[in-house]
Length: 329
Image (cartoon, rainbow, N blue to C red; front, side, top):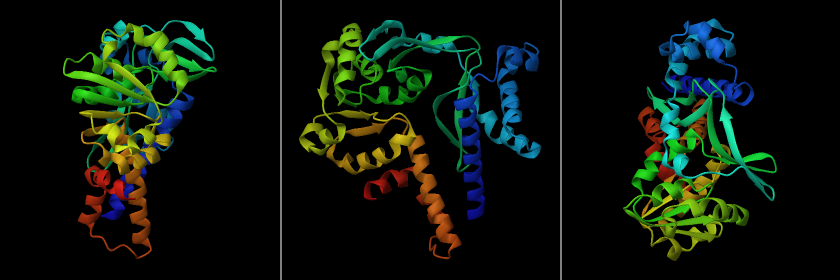
């Protein structure tokens, strides 16, 4: 049974590598002309055509191609409705001007028709199987972006909107936000009647200045917003700083590569809060930790040192177990 779990983890890793290659090197591989040729112009077949094209483009082995298309790509690829995001309150009400401020350049970026991107957190199914969620639009889509010295620093993409939905719904009373960015989360929760105040913890003075000069003046409820310039870990270490909040949302990383170890540090400090605390893309981070745990257990098993039963192993690979476990390692 342990070999079956390993097979699933190995396939997850294979799929993740394929998606990473596609998005990092060939995100515009699928074009409108290619999709028209595959589907005969039938838009209802876009997702299946997209899946078939990607799996054949990146997998040479025919058997593996069919397996990955059926078991992974069909659960992963989705055509999105651009109006869902263009009607988002932040998109409609907050305008990022096209201008340059010191080393910052503000403006717009675009997704080309059928350009792939990650649009929400991981999806889990059939035990330990997981997929990255690839989204695309069938027309051009613009989104606000800020560059620092020519490198993208922050953008409000569908991914940010989707991965913050649940945490926006949960916000109430006195809300603490760790990480400012372009103020998407702060704006959305400040619009809620049940939110009385929004305290943003941000250590970067340049980020704060940019936000205060170009974005905050557009907030209808900017009177609810308070910004404290301090490192998040230093702020949380002092229990008196965080006990006053009714809800906390932590978004201090770009992705799992810089977020996993920081998440583990923050979980050890979570007891300082008296309120519930949510973390951006937590499922993706927990997935990274789960991989470390599983392969450690598997290596121990191969070396004859594993004393855990199969059910105990499954329990230790559950996200509920890992959330508590990381507080002590």
